[in-house]
Amino acid sequence: MQVKDVIFNRRAIKHFDADHKMTAAEEKELLETTIQAPTSFNIQHWRFVILRDPELRAKIRKDFGNDQAQMTDASLLVLFTADMKAWKKEPSRYFANAPKEVAEMLVNWMGPFHEGREWLQRDEAQRSIGIAMQTMMLAAQGMGYQSCPMIGFDIEQVAKLINLPDDHVLGPMVAIGKGTKEAWPKPGQLPLDEVVIENSY
Image 1 (cartoon, rainbow, N blue to C red):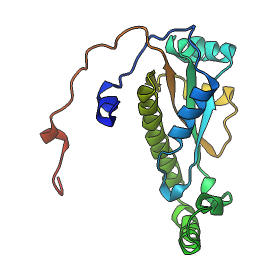
Image 2: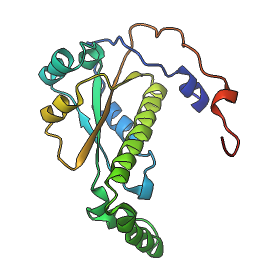
Image 3: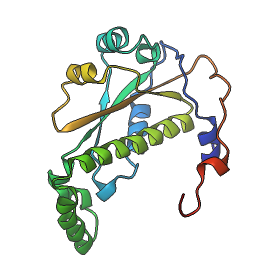
């Protein structure tokens, strides 16, 4: 598919074939494509929790997920998290293939940029999660799969279930698989002249 077609055809699908399984090769392709998503300083601080255990998925759906069927029925359920302190965990590894002077400049800048700015660390983590989520959903669409982004779950309880580290942030999850029902008609996009501002408000 052309990129534009992938973007226009991606929809939030709610009904999946519960018997369908993605192959290991397909999962790897999807994840390898997802990590091409950009991050500030190439920090790559997203962490993808594959919720594979059927009992865990059923518990999230029943107890903390508003009984959303895609949580158990999709072929793959990915919970997006990010390490807010990745900027100080061996930052030189983010520039392993960069020219030495570029690597040194960015590594030396990374600490002062993040230090003491917890709000920024959290914002950057969530921004990166959002970009990676869209990358994954578009990649899935291009592979012939459907997806559904979800934030309708108890964040605190799910964080406990997966033992989320204290220095990580929890984002939404994405269900991926073979859709069994068409999405509702698109509800409509706002006109460009309402969302595009020239230079300033």
